[in-house]
Length: 282
Length: 257
Picture 1: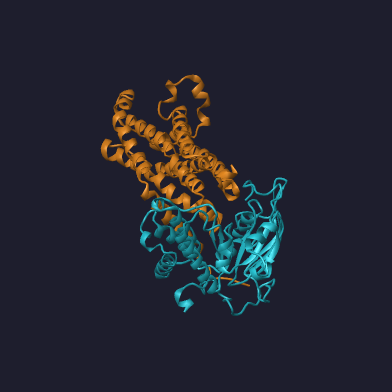
Picture 2: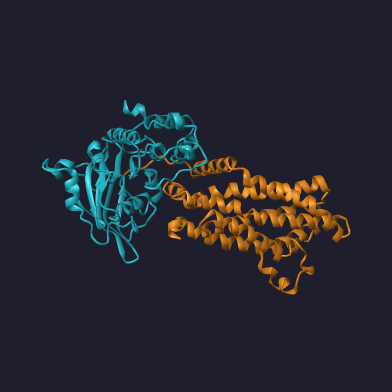
């Protein structure tokens, strides 16, 4: 059913692997014993003398939504940029689908769909044309591309504005288009960096539903946000980041133990250090 | 280990070229002005050149050379804005995060811009042939100059697109720089009638070398064409290398500059 709907990572992307099937060859392990889609280990990145990442470790399994939370400047976006291939770490390793992201960058980028924190769309062309570009660059063409565009437009409730130029859209609609450009190629790893920042409830609801559907179909999702209720709604596992490293990792139930709220947990663990809470290094 | 059946690099490049042509079609104003202004300029100023050269073919060739060099330099903004708008819109990083290789991304931007630059020059030459009976006795030599000069313009524009921080800065750089390089290179007004100091500094301008190569092409001087093309090609390689080095890393981001 889900395959018919085209939500699972495309077979041509996963030539030797499908979610829930053969995972041989992947290195690292998830808490459930499976092989991770994303495995980062010992990542260090410095901007000048200031460390943005300082021994960052994280694994994300296929079908998992990993919520990456932490104060501004904790290193979340730097991590996303490293996995996206935009920034090179000073030390450490990143494996995506078992491929070394630092040595096989192009192959890894084929496996990832990225929606960066800042809106980055072509303003003078239509929503459909933006999707056609990113779908085409993900290797889709012809009817397959048309079907993928149609699907993602429905998924994110963008059908009515498909023919509009991006510049004419509201902020919330642009947010959805940005996420759609990451999803249109059905990559097995989605990197969504604050995808609902400044979004209206309708946008938030459509986005969360789309993310849940993708994860249910086997896509690994790395989701950074400052809106903690979203993570509860997504039933995401949590990785709390502070000062460039993951300080706590687990399911919401494991971390809160039903005794306190996610918000309380976050506040108790992320009292800003002097070097944090600054946008200088996101 | 995950692997995928990769679509060919050529297919990704074709997608990007098609997209960049679409971007140009959606904002046709700059392109139209770069086509209409030179033919208007050529039509209005040709009588002056004819008078200065006492009529005949040379006057038309000088008018075409002046128009082509001046307005093709002003068209630097076409290749510059192709890069700058990606940086301003943060879409450069979106492209870098796809599986396209850096050379493919650059080629995807460069090929449509190159076609436009070459098309502009071909349009000016074609207009002069059709309307003013411009004689082109050695079309192969002329084509060599146009191909090389378009490449130089592309790389100069790309470098500007990487270095400036706003559309206004790009526009000012292209307008002022284009006029300076053109006039100081002796393209607009022959060097013989310009002050001595301009004649001394003229070879530093690519405008000088393209004007010289164009005049050589009209005269059938293959050696002059070769020399001009070599200098222009070296300018292109230098500018293109610097621009691509800046774009490969985080230099493609406005925030990093």
